[in-house]
Length: 162
Image 1 (cartoon, rainbow, N blue to C red):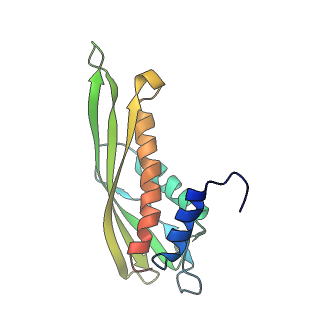
Image 2 (image 1 turned 120 degrees about the vertical axis):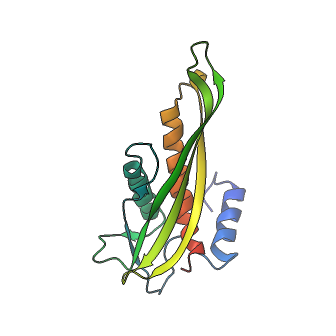
């Protein structure tokens, strides 16, 4: 063990790796070794949110050991829809400009085989908070929510029959 690595982090990693039979990244020896990421369909009024989501999904998949490749050569295809983007304002300034609150993003993810057969489908929601006194904005909260959403989606792949 590396000096300075918290024991709790080592314990959590150990439990994650062996507790339910899951490992980070695709299962070893499985037919599913590569994945493509489709641009999610945006069913909200939030413009172009699907593009940063795709970038964050690719980054998270790669960070967890997945081989992200083109749709033509991938064993799996990850896609879905952005269902909702909502804002909850907890504080406003005298001009009614939000100074604190949160942004929640909900998606439905669909995992398909190379042949197009649906393997699984699930919904995931994550949120990010903002406070103007910390130099944050609704946009920074939205980016934080997207980052957490990408993490949750990749973790959710384990529930989709991998």
